[in-house]
Amino acid sequence: MLIAAITIAALMLTTWLVSVAVKNASIVDIVWGLGFVAVAWAVRLTSDGNDARQNLLVALTSIWGLRLSGYLFWRNHGKGEDYRYRAMRKRWGPRFWLISLGTVFTLQGVLMWVVSLPVQLGQRADNADLGPLAWAGVALWAVGIFFETVGDAQLARFKADPANAGKVMNRGLWRYTRHPNYFGDACVWWGIALVAAEVPVGRWGIIGAVLMTVLLRRVSGVTLLEKSLSKRREGYTEYVARTSPFVPRPPRRA
Image (cartoon, rainbow, N blue to C red):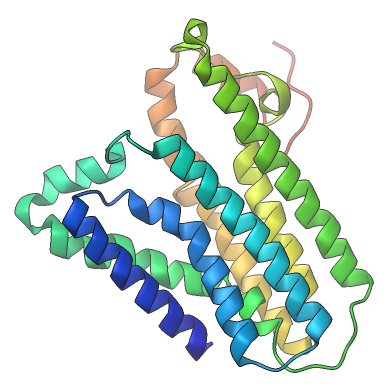
């Protein structure tokens, strides 16, 4: 856990320094996924445990983190700073460079440390082989990766068509949930938590999955994004009325 904290602190401090130099705090979003990869590998290389479980946790985390960071880099590259950070920069003025160290980078670092608890604790020394709970976790993780990857691809294709400008994405997975990518994120971390839970101390990692779900559903995910979308997308109120906000289900009838 200390190794994870040191890894995250070094990564976030470095990212903050780069953000100050380039005047773009948005790079923290790209580093978010990479941070979990760094934690997984740092713990793997410095701790003893069941090799199969350690390798599985590192693989699941690395695939998720690299995919997410790669996608965000592709989506955001060259588009300037995200509107959220521009609003903060406008509010704090010349002090933003320093205030962002605490309100953006340190905060996300702390959240990263807590969310990554199953990856940290699941790698602790234990002779128990992988069992049914771990494979159930892999299956849930796979569901999550499917929803994230397919949902992001469908949305990117929708936005690439100029005819869809200002319209609501309500096709494919987006017909069954307003946020398939966020639902996928939650499934991924509950899956990782199940893999870790076969180790007694790893059961505390469920805290990380719970926190990630709360963040996605109630804080920085669904709630924050929909405040903006309801103002920018014609027909979004009707879409909200018939479509599940998180867990996929058939749309309600009008």
